[in-house]
Length: 431
Image 1: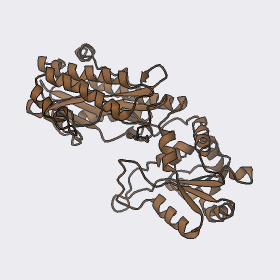
Image 2: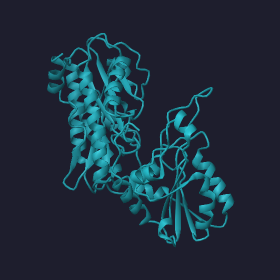
Image 3: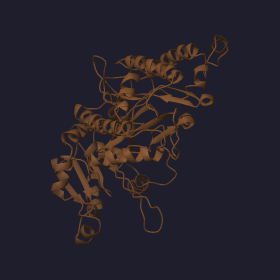
């Protein structure tokens, strides 16, 4: 991995939090992701399953974590199963984790090779009453193929059909939403790398450059800083492309007088940053661009202020909609008649601001977290990203920051990335 080894205390604490919520006499299993093929003998870069990483820090394919807090022997309370390395693997792929390296990464002392899994698990299943398995229950999850986890779960239930099977997902949804201070430190690193990328782009952006060239500036800065790269597919949309919410082509030339919307975040040690800024290609905003930008910025600042412990997310989004409605009225984009006749299920402001304002952020860009009326709590991390999109004017503006909820209010992880008009224009004037 490119990143510096993380403090294993992150994973020790996460496992303890998880096991504290398990039913008595239960074991839980977590699996790494598959390596997915492209064509011929090619494969996609390996990306670890975030649950096993959150619990162990193991960032290697073909890995299994088992936790069994009520195991009769101390050494069986936490076990890792890993691929045994050999000379051939070392030559072709690089050596895999040794047992000692796995302990240093995860804090887990008992490590077996995968070839021993069936033998070891058979002994432990004779002691366990319940088994926690992970099925993908994330609201945004879309899995058109059978994953390694699905295959092993199916085989496991077939081999041990009369155990009681329980779901890990509800526990993980509640726990992963709240980040430890150590996790927030890693997320701050991802944010700092992202800020370096934006500062590099502010010095590069000019009329005539191309969206993909901006993308290249980011990836250079990210990888140089030990990031694997983008936490998600970068959105770099100039002019009318900024009005396409998930624009991914990044193939248009940036024209004098246009804005460019840049939705980009670095990944560091699997933790994601998610930021959006809008910059004037020419270095100066037009009067109309300033007017719309100022409206979005006011909504963003007010929305960040609303993200506090005890707030219910569904109520928060209603409040943000009211803030945006006022701004759209002031801009002349909505009329009082539009408001009086709006559909409550799709308010009038949605014509120009059609996406949500905030989502959980962490190991996943759209991270685990509850949307069932559970109040916002200290340690949660959210994006805040209002926007106004006016296709007929070729203006799309979104401003997004990453916000840690604290007892007193919040910490903005991405505050060092310029977003005030005066600061953006001053930074671009130095070119």
